[in-house]
Image 1: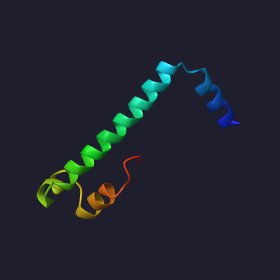
Image 2: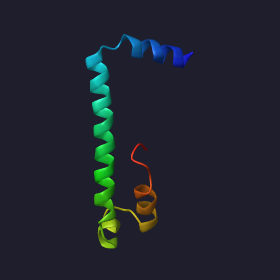
Image 3: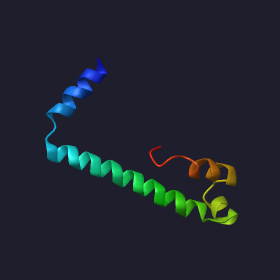
Image 4: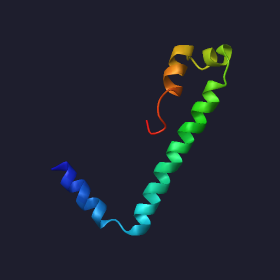
Length: 67
C-alpha cells in the first residue's frame, strides 16, 4: 500500500518538482563523495580529535556514494 501512495505522490509532482528532487539527490551524492575523500586524507591525530579510528574511517570511505 505504501508503494501505491508513493506512486500517486510522484505522479502528482510537476516536472519542475521532479527535477528539483533529482538535482537535490545528486547534490547529496556529490557531497558524500567529497566528504569521504576529505575524511580519507586525515591523519590519525586528526581522526582521534574527531573521536574516530582508522577502522571507522575505512568503513565509511568504502561505502558507495548513494549510501
